[in-house]
Length: 232
Image 1 (cartoon, rainbow, N blue to C red):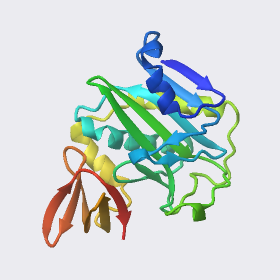
Image 2: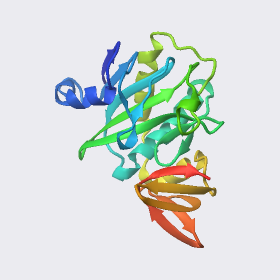
Image 3: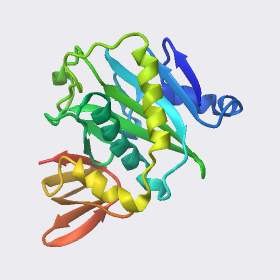
Image 4: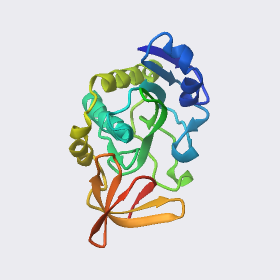
C-alpha cells in the first residue's frame, strides 16, 4: 500500500479524493491517516468532531460485489479487527455507525463512489481516553476504551493495520448478512428510520441482499434503503 500520514489535515477523505490520481500513480491501494483532523466529514453532509486518542483515516477500496454492501462489510471487519486487536467490542447500527457496548456512538464509516473499481472510504473512531461530552450531541457519544492512551505511532500504525486487515479479509456478499446481524445492536427491536420528511417505525428484521433495512410494520416487511436509524 501507499501510506501518507499527515500531522494535521482538514479531512483525510477530502485530501484523498483531491489527490487520488497522483497517489494512485504510486500504488493502487492508498491510505491517508492523520494525527489531527480539523474538518472531518460525516454522513449526509454532517461534520465529524475529532478528539484526542481518536483515529481518522481514509483509504481506497474495491467495492463489495454488491456495491451497497461495502460500508456494512467494512463495519463487520472493524468489529473483527478490534476483537482480535485488544478484545475490544464494537457493535453496529444501520447503516454505518459504530457503537460501544453502552450503545454510545464512537465512530462511523463514510463511503464515496469514484468508479466501478474504487470507493474512497473514510473512518472515524473515538478509540481511547477522551474529553468528549455527549451533552454536546443529540445522541450518546463515547469511546471504545475509556483508559486507552494512543502513542504518536499509533495514529499511523493502527490505521495501517486496519487497512491491511480489511484488504486481506474481504467478505463475500452471500456471507455478509449473518455476520452483520450478529453484531447489530437493534436486531428484532423497535426502530424509526427518518429520511427527510419520511419516517418509518417498525421492528428491524435485518438487512436484505443489498444492505437495505428490513422493517416489519403492521405484520408486513418493508424495505428501506436510506435514512438515519433511531432505536426506540
